[in-house]
Image (tube, helix red, strand yellow):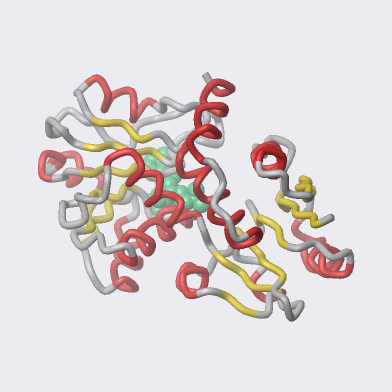
Length: 273
Ligand code: ATR
């Protein structure tokens, strides 16, 4: 029997075990997926343990996405660029290869909701942390050519733009004032996340009619940012699709087949309300 895991700290709230186990069951795959609580000071021994015990692969979540890299044998191109790994595959030769499926998961979710015809439209990415970096690189790789990054600390946005070699960095104030220019807006800040007390990075008063507004947070499903956008008639993309697709892409790396993302999104939506 193959087995997989997710390592993080904290880990008890992760929805990944239920999601992957449901896919294994649906697809009659003889495998299981378990949550592992791994504090930072035990990361190295945890990786060695997973290798010894024969895990076929695992997901990596906060706070280990960058710290795990020295313990892996190879990285794929996006993981290398992002300097972060969320999926590990044990290859046929027994090597550990790191991938990052978060950014591509976001692009899949976006395109599942609104199609692929927006690649040359102006996109506003809001936030410049780890999650934002991944999405910016993935959008560039997938052909989105008109990227602006707004952030509270503009220098952090500028650093990502410099690495990508395209786009521009702006302040949150400038984003708010020029909002009407953007067709797709992606909220990727952690404003208020820690306390569960969500705040808006800026006002959506000038949002254009017909804009597409996405958030990478999925719990709650309708963040204040998405609620405000929906009130103004925008097409909404919740963070749930990104979560499910990052898992599905990891699953595909391990199993070689893409699982049913639609029914998973429906199931999780019912749980999250
Ligand atoms: P993650 O891994 O989720 O991306 P992170 O790397 O800590 O988290 O990044 C947090 C992001 O949220 C950053 O863009 C941060 O802005 P700064 O670069 O200026 O720190 C943004 N952020 C956090 N709290 C915020 C707040 N109260 N208002 C606006 N932006 C905020």
